[in-house]
Picture 1 (cartoon, rainbow, N blue to C red):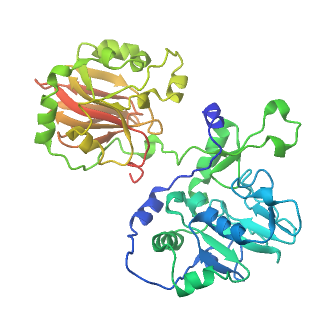
Picture 2 (picture 1 turned 135 degrees about the vertical axis):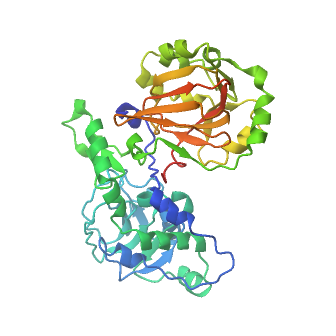
Picture 3 (picture 1 turned 135 degrees about the horizontal axis):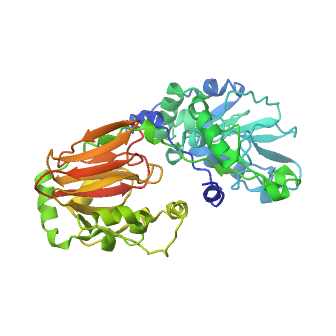
Length: 455
């Protein structure tokens, strides 16, 4: 996992906690109102930074605030190379100029002192993902920028604020008089800061951050979303030269935090589902033929079910990778998600209509058939951070039993046809078909945990 993270882009895209998502989802667009702009952001930020002497204007994210400011500024701008890349530091080098600085630092997510330069543009992107720690600003801090994109992960809504010690000649009349601003982003932002304190994200994720960093030999940053590492072969070099910024794994969901099964409550017409499946009945094939690459992970399991379990692929692999004996490496190359090319039987079908009711994209979509009187023995597949396994029985009865071994107990479930379920297959599980008919089901894997974050 460490090697996997080190190979990723340094772009930092944080995740939305389920409780934050719920608040955001409750906000509806206001198409018709014309309202005076009013925000509580200065009070919300005050435990960390006091901006009561500043004017504040809504912007669509920090980047737009920066664009607005430097596009109209007569001053040159200087930024260190590790700061936000979209700041136009090519204009730097001649006085008078501003120093652009982020606190916590975009370099490593840690707090630092405010630069003593006479003119400072301060970026607070990671405030809201740290514990409460004061940032003492001096009179030279003239411009400040903040958004909820980094701390709360709502980057696609583009919330943001631009703070300035002097009123902005254009934004003042635009915001205060014409009342031109993004009402939806504003309503979302105010709802978030009214429901969650400035250190809420840190309190929720701090222990997870520590555990991940311990496992990967990283050093936790002040921001819970970041960590640092240093090349052990060059440990005598300046830390500044070797530090790199890494996004921690997304709000990691553990199998013990989730139910064994969950009914998604999708809108499904079981008769139509059965009709569509019946039309494809002649296309069932054996497991090994249907699953190139994947069967090599569970050869003993495949041998046990080879004569009893068949399937119809509704998505095919985009490519077949060469054999790899290491299961760890096979997980890293995400073989399950390579089964993402829709077949003609899937595109525009009722199966697709069912699955696209869920938020996350689906891969390895198939129809499976377990012969009567047969079973799939106990086995473990993977954790939800790799993929989310879902099943929608098409034909079956209460003589088909799904078994799970969890916390020293044996759990048994029957699944109703026409319902789509999440299965927690990080636990040992098995299926026993004691009926006289085959169990036929629509099965698929979701790439992402968006549909189970509320569980």
